[in-house]
Length: 220
Image (cartoon, rainbow, N blue to C red; front, side, top):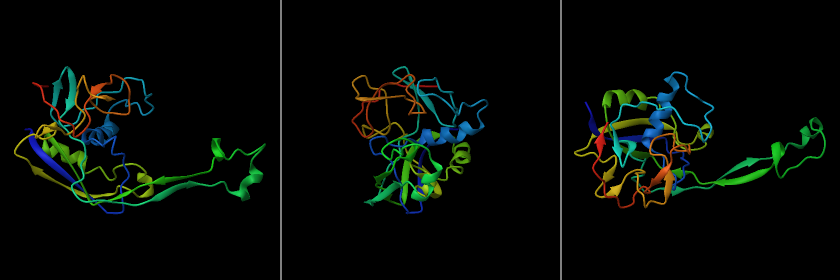
């Protein structure tokens, strides 16, 4: 049975790093978890190679001849505070004797850098979906961190909650696109299913939170 749901991820408040112009999509998170059990899954997939079709327990439809999971991007529903951190790498002088030739500190393995990062201090992220609640929860329980620099302790998920919604808001809500959706006039070139970083079968899409007139869809 497919239910219209809202999922809220509760974070530890230490900060999360993500690109607002490349919003995290719920189906990408679920596919990343499901892929771990996919037979012969290609972990070394090239950007231009055709990715495997990973099944997740959500509804899927054809929109303008493109497959789309009924899963929105992740949204912030609270006021956020941005902090400034630095991602540093410095060459250790006391290890110079282990190298050969002239050191290049501007590029290569010994490159030094001090790059700024802007973690957002927030406690909740939400997303909308239409799918099987029980089977979706099996995957949700395995999502421990979200966003970039997860190994540094950012984006840690404490728990999550699920509530049913009166309508399916995973694609469009009040005429606003809740995810990347096929649009021949859109200025976003991206796949309509994960992995979104892959360039195979990219099409023009609208941006998240743009006005979108949802056409007739065919549920798969």
